[in-house]
Amino acid sequence: MPDAKIIRYETDFANGDRLAAEGLLRQHRIWSAQQSTLLISNSIPDLIVILNEYRQIVFANDFFKNLNEKSQIEDYLGQRPGEILGCIHSGEKPGGCGTTSFCSHCGAARAIIKSLTGKKSVEECRIERGNNQSPLDLRVWTSPVVLENEKYSIFTFQDISIEKENACLMEEVQKLAILDPLTEIYNRRVFFDMANHELVRSQRYHNPFSVVMVDLDRFKLINDTYGHPAGDAVLREVVRLIQMNLREIDSFARYGGDEFVILLPETSLSGAQIVTNRIMSVGDRSIFLYKDFEIPISFSAGVAEFQFDVDHDIDDVVSRADQDLYRVKKARSEILID
Image 1 (cartoon, rainbow, N blue to C red):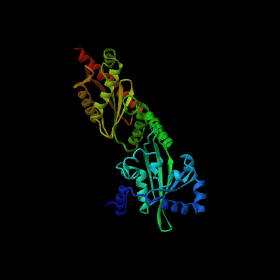
Image 2 (cartoon, rainbow, N blue to C red):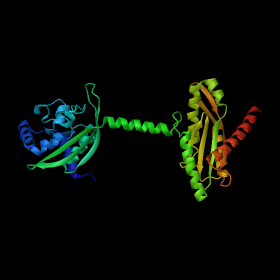
Image 3 (cartoon, helix red, strand yellow):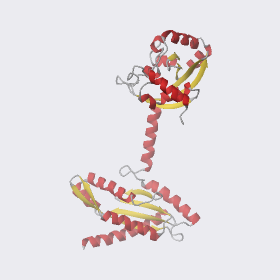
Image 4 (cartoon, rainbow, N blue to C red):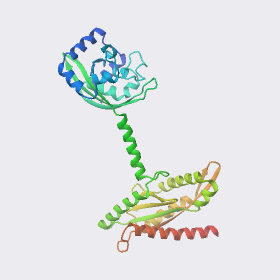
């Protein structure tokens, strides 16, 4: 159940009440008189402001003032964080920052509410700004303080835009390292990592596992007839069809070109053959619509189960699955020719 104090403060936010100039100047003098506050706040390379119970700024450190080019107290005194940062939502209501529907979802507003109810908070938020200014991605810390029987919140924030950008780049790099860029399934290297792990597990516990190799039929003809963009679209459709027939514990990867490989843990040869027959059956029934063309899809699949006394490594299993694929593909092509 929501904290009653937080609900009360959320209601208070909606009316947009502000302390008058005389009261603001009095509060500013109280904080400016705290020599320890001045020394500590100006030694920290973060933006720090002190907010009163009305969420108005009554004190700001030098780092904040220099960054915002607002060196005079008249430039920031009495304003709210979103207003001083140029949040586009701060002008949507006469009450200003903290009174709009957007504010109920803003991490900074949530942090302030918690602080005014006596709780420390850390939140992240994005401030959308007008006048062609870039948005700000911020991490906000708030801490409750009582000074001369009045409630305040120490509001500290860092620009984490570069951190966010680096995180996105790192995520993209990691994604490229494990996924095939066209089909967005695992790449060949990741498959072998998983398969080797499964082989070790199988040797230790004597659990069966199988490998399935899948290859598209007449894929070169599709590329030659409809173009390579059509071929790429067909590959993505094939991935979708195969994935629909796999379990969550199965691993599916692009082996190369129009060839795919599947790792089936806890699956014997007979079970794997059922999977391959089901996959080929789905392909044989599929027609892919690309622009104005109806492109028939079919693929062949071969299977091999790991044999404890025969296979030395995962390459041996893949090789036998590939040989079975060649046999199946040859048989299916002869049927099609007939």
